[in-house]
Image 1 (tube, one colour):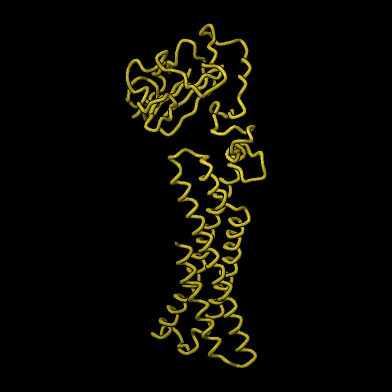
Image 2 (cartoon, rainbow, N blue to C red):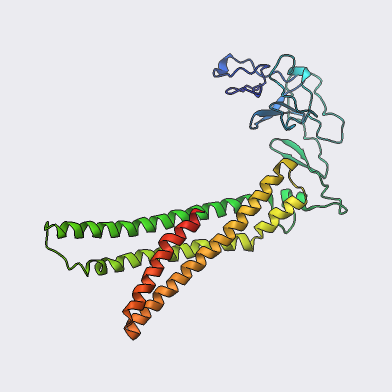
Length: 333
């Protein structure tokens, strides 16, 4: 038996109503027909599909986009006389016109062998999925088949998903790193200002007002330099992940070859645009970090070699501004 409980606004529980269920013990099980012995069940966003022991598929619930595979867009399972034998099997275009039905409603003593699948079909945990292109037909575009099956030297579905997740996680790490080092630098600065204010009010000895900042400047520069080095490592890693794996081109290929449904076209284009933006911004951010470090080290060399303290101070100010303002702004975008 299959029992579903919880929200039921589209009939996704398969009980013939839209009443929510919070007490599973009151259910007798979903009626999928006299000859349907359930083997697997999958819960979608607002719909549910079940697979029988002989690979028959029945789906019910929200059907606004035809996700039930019944040839219409009417919700199923939210009213009377829609379940049981009245609920048709999903026709996924197998070699047979309809799945073989067991002769009796009793469970078989052994699991029947799985039905053979055609070259343009994939058996998944949720049943058999048909592809739009046949992988064994060289006259057709095989990009989508290879993408799903990972049978060629191109990025696969699993690889692309992992790469997108990696890019997202690295950008989050870069943002957290930038904010952390900027807050540490601000903390050092505010702490020094507070100490100077207290000493100026005669709570302790008075410091030379011209030297208080010079005392904390090494700590501030140490924080910003470490922050820049960490940021350079992360941002250039992101640029490498995107460019070396041809992620932008891979998503364009998915769009050009229509590997996903038409409803997903806009999502693919948005994802491609986001990756292009990330690639440009991370490259700019990393380049600015490198430039600010070069300016800082150049200013330090001018101070030590030529005693040009003014150039060193200017370079330190530019470095700090680029890290605390430009970096944070770019990574926030």
